[in-house]
Each structure stands twice: as C-alpha cells, then as structure tokens.
Length: 367
Ligand SMILES: Cc1cc2nc3c(=O)[nH]c(=O)nc-3n(C[C@H](O)[C@H](O)[C@H](O)COP(=O)(O)OP(=O)(O)OC[C@H]3O[C@@H](n4cnc5c(N)ncnc54)[C@H](O)[C@@H]3O)c2cc1C
Image 1 (tube, helix red, strand yellow):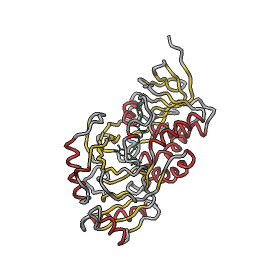
Image 2: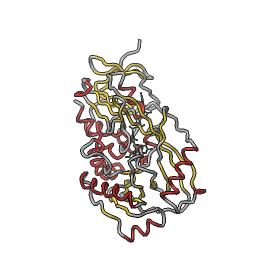
Image 3: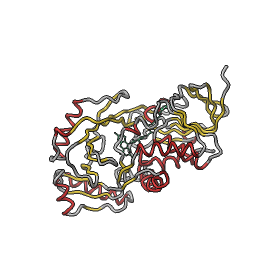
Image 4: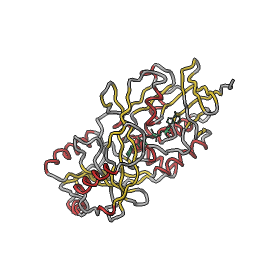
C-alpha cells in the first residue's frame, strides 16, 4: 500500500489564479509545505493563456460585488507586482465608444457607473481624440478610462512560478488530482505519485473547479461555458489605447474590442459562443459573424488582413438554473469545510483581480 505524504497546503490549478494564491501563501507563510498541482505539462495553458490580457478598471461590475472590489484592488496591486516580479504592466487606457445617438444613453450610464464604482479619471474623449479615433472606428461619442491597460501574461506566469519556487513552494506539473475526499486531518488527494493528505485546500481549477468541488460538498452549481474567439489583424490600426464598443444589453461579453499585446500585435475579439465542451477549435462560421460586427464598428479594417488567432472559454456558472453574476469564492462559512476555499465562475476580470483574490483567499484560511 502507498504511504500517505502529508503537506500543509494544496492548490489545484497552475493558471494565474492558482499561481497567485501559491505566491501569496509562500510569501506570507514560507515555512509551510505548499504545493501547486497542475494537470497539464505547462502552466497557464488554459484560460490564463487564452484571454485579452487586459488590466481592467472595474467599471462594468455591480457596485460592491466581488468582481468590482477585487478588480479595483487588483488593478492597483498589479502595478506594484509588475515592479516586484519584473512583469510588464502598461496603463495604455481604453476608449469606450458608441456609434449611434441611441446608444448614447448607455455610454452616459457607464460614465455614471465609473463614478459609482470609484474608477479614477474617467472622462469624455476630447474632440481631437474623437477625430483620431474616427479614422479607425465608427465613433459618435466616447469615454476614456485611463486605469485600463495591458499585462504581459506569459511573463507573469513564469515570474510567479519562479517566485513560488524561490519562496520554498513546490509546483507539480503533469499531476492531475483525480479524486479528493474529506479526511479528519484535512483532505485526501489522489495524485499520480500516490495519496497526499493536505491540511488546507484551495480549488483554483478554472473550468474544472465546479466538478472538483462537488466531490466535497453539494455546491449547487452548473457549468455554463461561453467561448470567445479572436482574430489577429495585420493591417494598420490605433495602437495608443484599446478601443471597446459600448456593451449593449443583449451581449454576453463586452463587445468585439481591439486590443494589442506588449509587442503591439493587434487582435479583435472575443465574441461569444455557447459551448458544452472544453474544445479550443475555432468555428469559422462564428468568425464570419464576428467579421460582420467588426465591419460595423471598425469600418477602416481591411477584411483580408484578419486571420483566425485563438480562443478561450469563459468559466461562467449557474446556480439553481440562473446565471450567477459574480465570482464564487466560498470558504468554511458556506461549505462547512474547514480550510477549504472554492473559486468558481472565475471569468473576466479574473486576470486583473488575481492579486486581490489571492489575498482574499488567504484570509479565508487558517494557516
Ligand atoms: C476570452 C476571454 C477573455 C478574457 N479576457 C480577460 C482580460 O482581458 N482581463 C482579465 O482580467 N480577465 C480576462 N479573462 C478572464 C481570465 O482569463 C480568467 O479569469 C483567468 O485566466 C482564470 O484563471 P484560472 O487560473 O482560474 O484558470 P485557468 O487558467 O484555466 O487555470 C486552471 C488550471 O487548473 C488546472 N486543473 C484543473 N483541474 C485540475 C486537477 N484536478 N488537477 C490538477 N490541475 C487541474 C487546469 O489544467 C488549468 O491549467 C478572460 C477570459 C476569457 C475566456
């Protein structure tokens, strides 16, 4: 029979969420025996490596929701973290525009929400900014959000990995936790290398966290996956700030926006496509629909210069059959399980929120 290995903390998932929690725990508690388990060969290979890489401001979310609070705090923390871990975090800002006068009301609402949500510096675009934007997008009116920006995600993943190891933590790739059960001293994990008993457990399993958690308690959740596809663009485009359309009520996402990465490569997306499986294939029909939307919002775009890029899957969740609008971060109070924290529905702005989420999670544990 296999000997049981005992550890202090197990974190499920080597995406940005699990790595950030691993970093925070090993930073605050370097004496603990902390392990991050990743089932794949690479860290950050799922949603973390398949997003827009945008440092969000916290503008869109219901006031005082976890999405709002953790995004706002995470936005500030990333700047400090970027300096500490040598990760590029650049506040290029973003414009949110409306094309038609009947969309103006929605833009007015967003501007008011920015004040409600304490987002610094949001203002109407000047005439000269609007004239510049009009060369690229069908802009009638626009607001500028200066605290939005970009994060070099691959650099963040490798810097966090290095920091966790330097702090004395452990990262086990290619190590699928196939089963978890409650044990009188914590939680028993079935791993490639035999059973492991951990005192504390953090479920940052991304698209797999709902089903993982259901092995421990009936969380009542259901996965609701929504794919987002991207098109890369090789033509000329505005590269000073991101450009977003005004999010209209019928959209499940923020609308097809233009962003760029640290190297200045332009991409459009993500669109929204309901899916039932985790499959990163790109549906060409869905790209054609996105092209129609791009032609409407960004008339300067030359269609021949758009090419399929990649896609990511939003880990939305439903509770009792209804879309759950916030991050689901539950500790002992809700789960009745001491030293277990469950993170589900960790969709956008999860990248931005991750440094604040990690602190929030650590406060729910007794380490
Ligand atoms: C299209 C799209 C665009 C987005 N754009 C932005 C943006 O611009 N800005 C922003 O702030 N947020 C954005 N987000 C959200 C952000 O990408 C996510 O919130 C974040 O990446 C989630 O990270 P994660 O670590 O929870 O998940 P993941 O990166 O998916 O990591 C989870 C990991 O857990 C591992 N795992 C699961 N189960 C097990 C197990 N049993 N054993 C071992 N390992 C396991 C998986 O292999 C995976 O690597 C976007 C999301 C999408 C889909």
